[in-house]
Length: 413
Image (cartoon, rainbow, N blue to C red; front, side, top):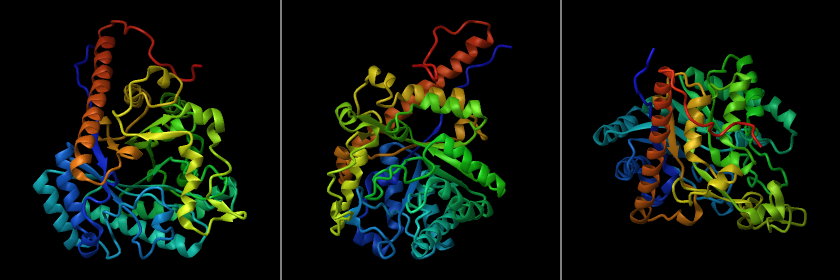
């Protein structure tokens, strides 16, 4: 039977870490919720109706000094003081006035860190964010799993079952998903360990999901997929999505970060995909440099190979797409519809623009505003184009008309 043309568009959002200092820190310290109110207004100005709110440990609790971090800390939802109904009411009023909503709350930290006291601080913060998510009507929290670098990968799987599953149980108690981003976090420490977030690839996602299922929290464990990290590891989105489908796990991806990666062919020629292994300046005498500012050079394991892309800012490069050295955004959105399975349908999937393009990470809203507005417009147009193509081809097929061409194929080399 012939079908009607009914394209389904994803829900566009932006991660508020795109502009950490929209509200100056001294004002945030006095009035933590002002940061969210300001971002709600700014979000409307740059063209979205949804936000992924960024949170980070309060400076008084953080185990990593700011000068050792590659990126400034975006603590737009501070829960040092528990987020209660009165705070929620204030934010809900701002949301209603701007006709905005939250996709989820993002807190990106190492939840398997070996130090038990530090780990408890991080877990407590995440649980407080879960409570805030419930009060704010968000359906998920988002973050990393992390890794205990003193253990091998098999031991970290055991640690996941012992230490991370309780977070999934806390999410289940609150009716939330825990969406895990897959960045391998190669520069998270000064060791030569490259995979410092164990949920870095589909093979691990499946193993972690099986452990979650064992404890009846499989529905809480989902992936917040970011194509930039696939490019970093030499993968491409279509192969990855097709693999999940072939293995029967194409339901695992629950949301998307829209952030690209532009590979540096010269850097890859020099170091390969393992990144720079020596002469980084982050270690001294076989130990992390006591000057913590120099420890951020550990990120040369990643940045020597590539630079993050804000969608729409990099030049259109078909050869780079075929080489898996940058993201083919149109095929990304097509592959998501062709290969993945979304429980509540494509129209309920969050497509979150994440800005980490270093050259454009200015903290002046007047300068960054037009940049974000353009990237968001590009992302919307790409998603609409993919949705329209996919829906139109279903119409053609339903009438017995052959769809022309082959398209990009998975596993083809």
